[in-house]
Structures are given as structure tokens and as C-alpha cells.
Image (spheres, rainbow, N blue to C red):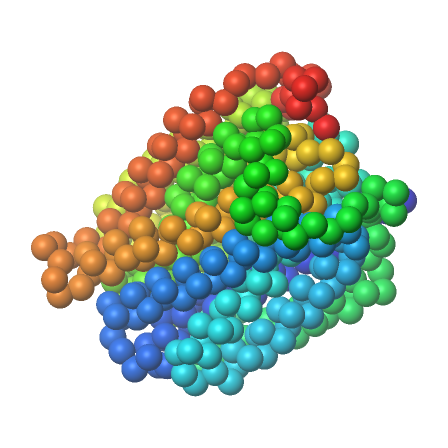
Length: 414
């Protein structure tokens, strides 16, 4: 049976991606300051631009990779992306100028767009009522990777800001080899469709999204939530230095704790909460809890308080898998890759906006021109976008529930 093997490989792929994503976070401030020969406040501005370049690359690449996976299958797209990530991490070990750092992170954004193909592969082999649970497994894999990645990055970062990328490259290459020999194709030939550039570019994906009933509302929530949730990966390292005075090793330990909270939430919270409340309400509860935590981080100023606030992070776990499941329900078997590309594109829009809104705000309130030193300002911005996401989510029509999760009306059921 291919479903368990497929799920295992996708979980492993997301795990490796999360390690690679998290491994840079403890060393990013030092890396930018080293290459840019600048101070912490200026490094935040550079990191803002790097984040936006990476997000634009993901925004453009995601619908392309999603549509390519509908045409050629999930396997080819995922293996190519893993090979690209391995090469990108190798490049990051040798860059010595800011332009090359920007190029390397843009490549990370392009190959990271394979998330759409990974989600589509899960949808290929999963019944609609089980997708939130299985997308939860993906979230758990990301959480575990988020434990391992920052821990490795923090430890190796003590050697040097480039050392973690060697480990990330080796892991990506190993996963590519595993997939090459053991990952089966999940999209049957009769369900494939011709590749069309009019649908594979961001504007074409936007038109496709508007043609799918209810898709635009869920995508809007996803954009708002993406902006809010990125406050951790985009600002945490800078925040911990400016607010708490932590070292790279301490930053890595705290990010590992975030990963523990996320993993526990995905493993023990997502299924029961979605079963009890349905996908829409489970996502609403999770975002509301996240907003409360963001407000807490805006004002906390002790190490103990910062770690205590990590505990309720586990309860926001249902948000992402619930939104992914809501989007997946609006796709046919032939367009799962395209719709997952739309979801990745929506997250890319959030990633484009988030650096300026989050890192930019923090840079302003920690720079010399700041009226008051307030590194936690970015968390208040995140809280605002979380509240907007809740408002948009509550506007989505409540749908009938069957079994363990929400079911769409016949007009929009896959």
C-alpha cells in the first residue's frame, strides 16, 4: 500500500526542510552582520530585504511547481526540489558578499515552493475527512525539524555562522536519495493534465482561485495568518538579542522549545480539536490563543517568562492543517497540485509582506531614531493580523459537518 510510504516520505521531506529552515535562524544575525559588516539594527534591515526576496521567489515558484506536479507527477518535482536545496545550502557555506547571500536565499525560496507538491501528494492518497489529521502529521514533522534545526544551528553556530549549512546540505541530499529509491508516484497518469503557463503564473493562479467557490476567503485567511505566524521565524533571533540578551546557543534552545510545543500540539491537539469543533472553529481557537501569546511576548522581559509563554503555543497547532484541509476540499483530484500551489502562493504573499511589517517594525523600535526602545513591537503587529484573520475566518460560511470534519456543499465538494 502506497499511502503509508507516501506519508512517511512527505513527513521526512518536511522534516528536512524544517531543519534547513531552522538551522539558519540562530546564526542569521551574526551571518548578516559578518557579511554586511554592520551592527544589529542595520542587520535587521538587511534581513528584511532578504526575507522579501525569498518570499517573492516562493510566490512565483509555488504555482509553477504545483502545476508541474499536476502534469508530471509529485515525485519528479519533489526530488528536483530536494536536489536544489542541497546545492543551495552548499552555496551558503561559501558566500562572502551580500548579493550572493540574496541569491542563495532566493534559491531557497524557489525550491521551498515544493511544499505544494508535498501537500498534493498527501491529498492524492488521503480521504477528505482524514486530510486535516494527515496535514497535522506534516505540521508535526515541521515541529520536530524545528526542534532539531535550531538546536543544530545553535550548537554549530558556536563554531562559525556557516557551519550549520554543511549539515543542512547533507540532510537534504540524503532525503533526495531516499526518495529516489523508495518514494512512489502518487498521481495516476489518467489524473494528470496538461501544463498551462496561463494557470501556472501567480496571476493565472489568482484567476483559478476566484473560479473556485469559497477559495478566495480561505486564501485571504491564510495570507493574514501567515503574516502573523511569521513573527517567530523572522524576528525571534533578533528579538532575543535585543530584548533578552541571549547567545546563539540560547536562541537555538528556545527555538527547539518552540518546536517541542508545535510537535506536541500537532500530535495531540489537532485531531481531537478538529473532531470536536470542525476545521473552521478549530482554526479560530488556535489563532485566538496565538494572539494572546503574541501580546505576552510584546512585553515579557525575563527568560523564565519567555519560556513559560511557549507552553500555549501547542494549542495553536490546528490552524495551519485546518486551513490546508479547507482549501483541499475545494479541489478536484486533477487540480490538487494547483490548489496546493495556490495555498503556497497565499503563504508567499504573507511572506512578502511580513518582513517589512515585522522585522521593519522591530528595526525601527530598536534603532537610534526610536522614540522608545521596544523590541516587542513586532509581536503587537502580529497580534493585529491574527485578529484580522479571525474576523475573516468567521465570515466564511458555516458548512454542514459529517464525520470528523467540515464538509463542503455539493457545489464545491471535490
